[in-house]
Length: 573
Image (tube, rainbow, N blue to C red; front, side, top):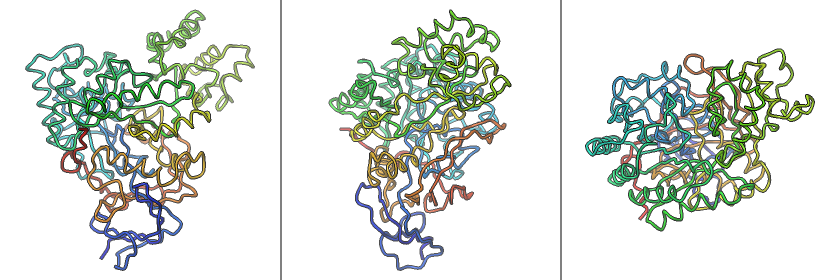
């Protein structure tokens, strides 16, 4: 007897092949039948007019902590994501020495925008080894989750506070590498690292992995190559705009040394910067020649990210801005109201050093979000340029005055600069490159600033009823089989008899994502942005219904996916 049968569905199986009508039967967590089902089943449903696809795979999340208080990985699960890759950007919660939990929490709050209160109250922090961390999640989550081991945690465990600013001795380097081996033996998917200049810890210092030299990075890459089903995720400063020659060489060498794929995040596509995509993909070309593979993650949607002059955000990362925006609020307001200070900030914003953050500095294109003072009543939803024209001010002065009236609590939404037809056409072409993969949601991070988790449903809705830059079958493949094959997931990513029953059933006429709204449902009543899924009928994880009509069922059928057991090696040579 089957556990469940879905009849008359339009099956899009993840291979990119044509859709077909079929019944799909589930038994024991796997797909038992695809075709005509004759067996009886405990439960059944008619899926006529609906699309059945493999569960989506999100290749870049930061659910490392959230899964402890939210085993459903919301809102990703509602949007059809059944497998998440976490432990990215060099940041993980393990290995962890006693006494280091506070440092780790403050670092994650700073670099990944997680609520410090939620981190303190929502996770047990009871593990020491990476394997113990995985064990703490196993059997308690509703999604499948795989984790890299973070370079920062490895360094901190071995070197202590000297991991920030110091270099390991030969003995310490050996210990770091042994610790990485232990993590991968326990199931880590590989190791992740960051060299990005935007990543600083809770004390404002460059995070530990930023101090690593190539010798250390290559030693860890060699360790990755000794384990089955592993790979590398790496972030360098040039990920945000354009790689330097040295960064291209480093990424290629890391992948070639490991003999494993390396992915990086995120490739920003903008027709106004036509040389960016070719420059970034030079890393892939260089890696291929060296015997490696470097894969760029890119988002198929534009994910709004709010800004604030009151709390840390991307504006702080513009050279010269952090010193002003890091001041106490009264002093910050005083400085921001100084015309000379504003002029200096605008010069920094227009400089070459600002890189990709220059796109955030057309302040006339900001939309005013939530406001908190009587002086700003009626401004929510209005464009700063229009308000500035009414007041006879330049846009930046106008924006500063609006924020000052709210004691800098005003929420600001910059309008995207790359929402033009030429940029979308360039995205469509970029997605076809063999070393470009859709993803980079950062789900689980920057919770009150952005909500990238719904990229799956928004992308499918756009493909079906919007720009139609990809057909349905190809779009589903990009969200399922492509990331599954990159990570070497065993028997996931396709609808095929005998494979794991990770499935999503949706209405092609409705699938989409609702606008993000701010909710206060984290531990400590901390806020985050959430987005409802539209048109998703049901989601199954390992054959168990986890979502029905955008609502979690309470089941926790997910698994911690461990390298080797649940992933196979994707060799590059």
